[in-house]
Length: 230
Image (cartoon, rainbow, N blue to C red; front, side, top):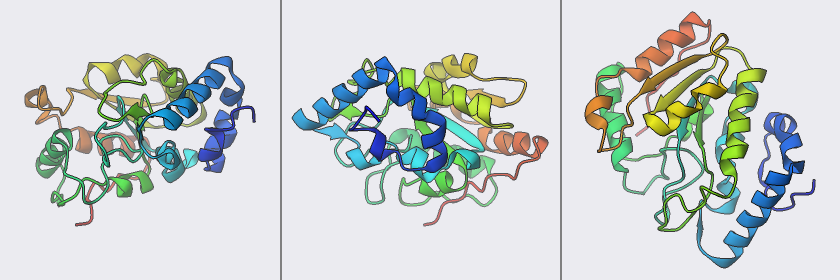
């Protein structure tokens, strides 16, 4: 592969096969150089081995649900490659606290854990995908113009074309714009307000988690267990 920095970080075989053509594209060669340069010059998040963590934890053929975020958390230690998730030991971000609050009223048996790690969701088939996969520390959206969205838009197209019966959960106006990339005859889309403190009053009561499971059942897919270990 021409892209020597990013390609080895994507290790899941299904994703490698499905996305391999992108790594030869002109835009991706430029993205690769920019990301490599950024990591060599400033502090960039997440750690480079976690850039494709969402893909490596959730194999392509196991994806049942996609939850789309915008870009990684930008404070040190927060980002670990999964949208809305932080490693154990980190303070739970406000948006995730609101997600837990909604789950506690929407999903029977859910009890908010004392951590913000959503790895268990990823392992159950929930692709926690950010539209931009890297960010400079303390500078939100600083890599938004690198070309990551060209890549992740193609990821969404690949999911839409390659798989059947995926539920896409789109929170907020940014995520809702991605609806045009999804084949609505094969897949389902659930749109709600974003869980951030700025819009959570419209998010609470949306029941997006139970609605996701209802759609999965209609698609003859197993429901997601949204509970998290303490």
